[in-house]
Image (cartoon, rainbow, N blue to C red; front, side):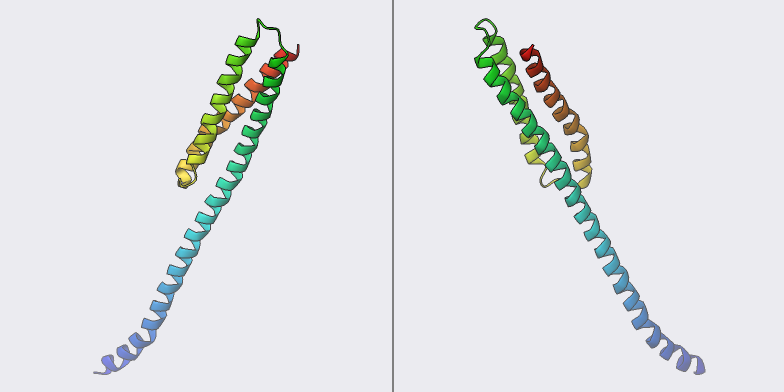
Length: 136
């Protein structure tokens, strides 16, 4: 009987503390999850901004190449038109892939970064190299 009189008040004292601790843990978990979501969104925004900038630079180079091709010798125009068409098609494909990433999770975002970044860099380099070659 004495044990019950001691345990019951102790249980009533500890139960709210345990519930409060569980609530704190739950809030901490929710806060950590929200922080992860926010970080993923920020990383995606940063990646998307950089990728869009790279695609815009490639577009500028392609447009300049298109202008130079208009002034090129007639025998070189078909080759240049094909090159411009291929570069522009590739740029559009990459822009479409970038647009499809909006609702992807962090894992898919990292994979997309690994896939798209080198392809965008290659596109920019190919457009720049074609422009440099035409200038010579």
